[in-house]
Image (cartoon, rainbow, N blue to C red; front, side, top):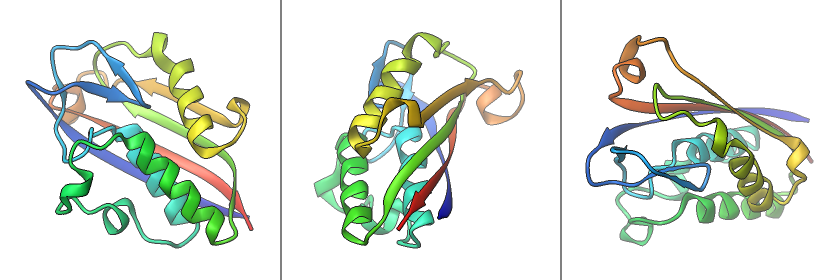
Length: 156
């Protein structure tokens, strides 16, 4: 078995949609990035790639490649999963945390879990998504950005 950890952060920006875990969330600000800037799915991708020692999301989907401009991070996660399976790895579980001062994410957690489970091809019971604030501290507390951590367990 192998453990992977992923982390991602994106700046909040006007004129962008807020997409987390593949769910579009109504908010006055969205996340800035080359793709849809879904920090949660980017952290999950990095956790999976790291566990398999296959690099990181930037190696496989560089932000300099126009093919990935505006792409759904669910597609990236599906591609990461295919790469893992191609290399003989299978995902056992994923645990993740979104760090955001607002909006409140509890109403969207189950759909995020469902999206991740479907993209990775595992049961929803093997996917955890949590959300927390930083009590007004740091760049997330100042509402300048959103961050996410993910850990996973894979097996050969």
